[in-house]
Length: 289
Image 1 (cartoon, rainbow, N blue to C red):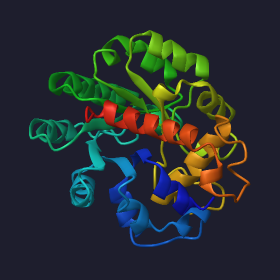
Image 2 (cartoon, rainbow, N blue to C red):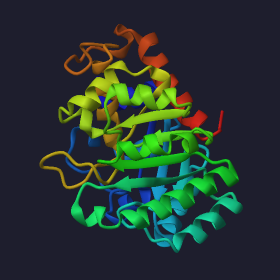
Image 3 (tube, helix red, strand yellow):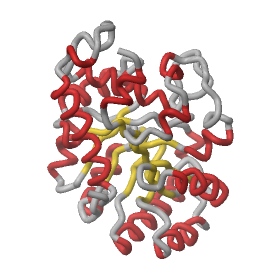
């Protein structure tokens, strides 16, 4: 099945990417050399079946993002957050101005990152920025997109506060299936999002995508980041590769990765139900249903 068939037949949702950074790297006008680039960027961005949530982390990024979102504001949504790798606390005021003027649909990405010693050295700033963003989410009743590396214990620590929010996306979730179930048991209205880690054999991510209830699952690219070996960038259209792999992992269509027969000959209803569920998850998280 061609990627264009997938896009033309089903709703496709990217729960996390960075349109400003894609634009900065000329990825919104280029068709780079990957399989999914057979479906060009203009084709996917302009498709009525494509939905996405884009995140920005500086005033400049937000301005660039807003220009892209405005073109398709019924399908492409906007978030702003203070990223834990660069916890600039002065952006809390800017974030509140966006919330008070209703210019964003969600907060984030926000959270903790202890992957390197450099990031870990800013733990105190990460904590302050995260707690500030949590308070703003509660004040303006907005959902949050979480970033977390080597910090799952922090999400359990803040689970009571997270349970007070309308929705939580665990972006590029790196925990186990059992930890995901445990987080949900804390009363968090959580969605677990996965990208290219399911393409490179990440066992925990593959286990989660295979086992999580569909109403708690989302897929993403994190474009232009989260590249595979040999890639310079991740492209927005790579979401089609992620969807195709998820179909396979969930045994919706075991032949999907290797067969060329037409979509009419497949179990269309199961594929459609899965895509519609992820669509409902993203729009439900955003309060758009």
